[in-house]
Amino acid sequence: MLVDIAEDSPETAERLRSEILEGFRRLGRSPGIGHFHEELLDRRYRFWNFYSYVVCYVWERKPIQIIAVVHGAPDLASFFGARRGSA
Image 1 (tube, rainbow, N blue to C red):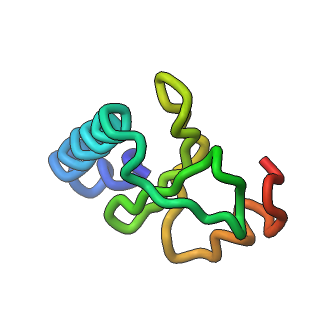
Image 2: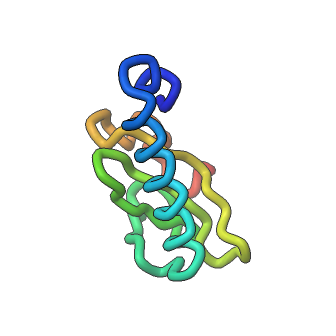
């Protein structure tokens, strides 16, 4: 993602990279800020909306474990598999 952006605007890519890293640090400091999607995965996993992306992470692990960063537009059930606890 950042590579594609950097081709058009290195400054924008660097700014976005910094914002993403700060967002991940925020999750590390406050892992409960996300929400559950129990229809997708069990309560070990939280989801956090970050700009147009959704971050899926294991929130009770220290440090947190980021599972995926997915663009929010596609159907999350298709990405994660509709079965609860499938991960």
